[in-house]
Length: 198
Image 1 (cartoon, rainbow, N blue to C red):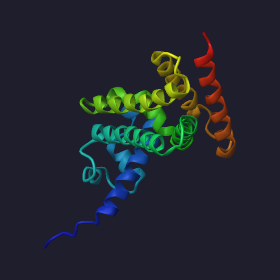
Image 2 (image 1 turned 30 degrees about the horizontal axis):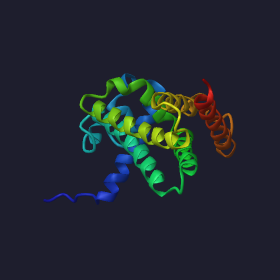
Image 3 (image 1 turned 120 degrees about the vertical axis):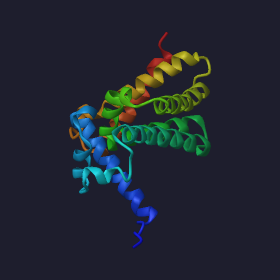
Image 4 (image 1 turned 180 degrees about the vertical axis):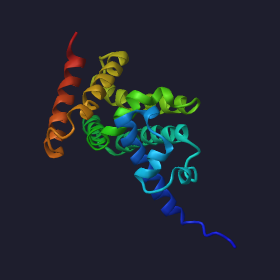
C-alpha cells in the first residue's frame, strides 16, 4: 500500500511553523535546554515526526539563522535597486531592519546567543550573508557621506544594528505603531552623529 506524500506547500508551512516554534523555545530556554520532543510538542507532532522535516536540532538551528540572514540580505538588495536615491534607500533599509527587530525578537535573541552552536560550514554561510548585508548599508552611507571612511561607516552600521536589535529587551513596552517611528528617529540620529563626529 503506497503512502500519500503531502503537498509541498503544506510541508513548507509545517517547516515554517517548526522554525517559528523552535525560535521561541531557543530564545526562552537556550538551544541546549530544548529537546526535539519539546519542539515537536509545540507544533502538535511527536519528536520523531519532526525528523521528517529536519535531520536534528543542529540542522534546524542552521536553517533558522541561514533563512533570516538570507531574507535580510535579499530585502536590502531589493530596496537598494528600487529606491530613487541614497536617502530613500537608507530609510527603506531602516524600515527593513526595524520590521525585523519588532516582529522577530526571538530570532534576534537566538542569533546573539546560539550562533556558536551552528555547525560549519553553515556558520560561515551565515556570516558571509551578514557581511553582505552590512555592505549594502555601507554602500548607501558612502553615497550620502563620501568623505567618511568606510571603516567608520561599517562601525556605525553595526552600532545601529545594536540599537535596533535591542527590542527583545523592550518588547511590549510600546505598541509597534509607536516603536517604529521612535527606532527610526533614533537610528537616523545615531548615523548622523557617527559620521559627523570627528
